[in-house]
Amino acid sequence: MNKERIVVALGRNAFGETFPEQQKNVKKAAESIADLVEQKYQIVITHSNGPQVGMIQTAMTEFARLDHRYTVAPMSLCGAMSQGYIGYDLQNAIRTELLNRGIFKPVSTIITQVRVDPFDKAFHHPTKVIGRVMTKEEAEKEEDKGNYVVEENGGYRRIIASPHPVDIYEIDAITALLDAGQLVIAAGGGGIPVMEQGTKLKGASAVIEKDYTAAKLADMIEASHLLILTSKEHLTIDNGATPLGTLTVEEAIQLIEEGHFEPITTLPKIDACVSFVSSGEGRTAIITKLENAYQGMKGRTGTIIRPNFPGNKI
Image 1 (cartoon, rainbow, N blue to C red):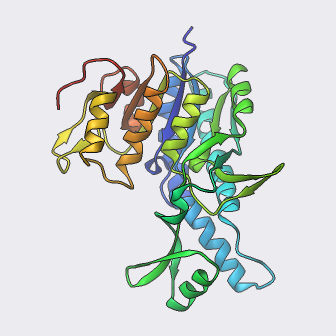
Image 2: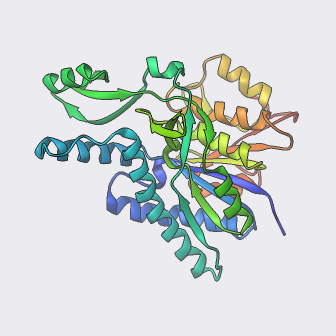
């Protein structure tokens, strides 16, 4: 029986941006996950929450604006809401798909907190745009609170930090569920960013890049594979003209240093893969499209990063 552990990171294309879109798209994600379950992998799923956390933050902000008895929800709370909302749809879609294939396997979602460093330089250079478009007056009020604001398309939007993950607090629970034969959904949206204050965990006004948390999670559970599923079959360079096949860590690092990857979107994916593969022995990372999850695990498609193997020439 296959006992290899893998972490599957689902991109935003697995969910869409509205309630109906998400319920429709998670069925496709469930099919790809079920293909891997049939191969007897132990699986932890993490996922993007970009549109969802922005939607929640916008809704809670509007609610506070309309009823002054309530305050704006902090980003950590919005992150927790998005984990529950996405996890609910995803775990039910996977459960249904597995049962339709004659497989009984419990699926659990864990609200996951991830420690970040309060001195992470990302807090001084925010990159993640969130929430609704604001007027200049509203933007100035945000800045008076100490928040960052960026001008965009004739309006203003809040922009927050994306620090790196340091530790995952619920890792023992995740491991225990894996050992019990369950499929686990954890660290959604990169996890809820928190800082330690004595015995208390305080939410940080940030969003962690989910690919970095996926790599951290894969390392901590000693996974053999990190599988990042996107809307594209391969990563590409040269403005999309050159697809990337199998790479060694050294080749991937060279491409990073040469500046081939867009900093906000593709760079975190390849960087996270390099970090995971180079942090242990016998590890492989794959980046490919959602529908090709099984083929990617078999090494038949996608951008594949391996250590100490001759890579395909670029």
